[in-house]
Amino acid sequence: MSEALTPQELVRYDRQLMILGLEGQQKLKKMSVLIVGAGGLGSFEALYLAALGVGRLVIVDGDVVEPSNLNRQVLHWEEDIGRPKALSAAEKIRRFNPFVEVEAVTEHVSESNVDELVRSVDAVMDALDNWEARFLVDEAAYRHGKPFIHAGVYGLEGQVIPIVPGETSCLRCLLPPSLRTPPKTPAIGFTVGIIAGIAVAELVKLVTGVGRSNKGTMIIFDAASMETTRVELKPREGCSCIGGNQTPSS
Figure 1 (tube, rainbow, N blue to C red):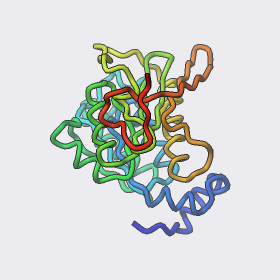
Figure 2: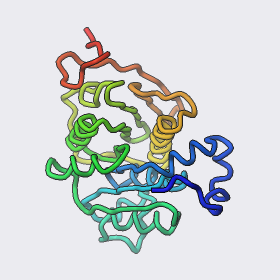
Figure 3: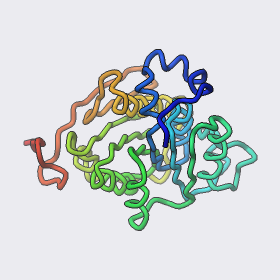
């Protein structure tokens, strides 16, 4: 993929070039990102990444659009009900920014496909709604040395954790292993959009070097109070990701 920006792209990204610089924008164009989940978080993440000019997006989701999705999953519209989410999302992104290459994978992430999916990209975005799949993707990202941005939402609260293999611990190590997926998760569009925006911002900072990364830190946002909390996380003793410069917590 060419890093050179076309005249049309230079105009399109004019305002953010003032922040990221030409080199930063070229890094984004060269980059490929796996978005695992095309629901609420995935819709916003894909939209923001496409707006930024990330060169290639791989959107993975095995579900179809349902009416209850439409309050927050902004890439799916009334006429998409019953369609595969990955196809619906990819279609909108192609229309939104023709300079971004988009691949839709209409499968659930699983042990049989996760390594191939993660190997094919430069970074991974967590837009999932269940912990079992999150840990599966996290382990694959760590295994293949790919940055992994965890994001999760529950009601008016959400959290983001940027994970960089070799520099931070993995998601399973940083969070309690007893986490289980609730049967139904409360979600509202503005919280989902804010959390997705924070996740994308953390990825952009890692890629371009603009700003200060919060890698290995949990960023918690509470829309009820509009408060943001940062929690420095420590690795868990006995986790297989611990090595190199990592020191287990006592």
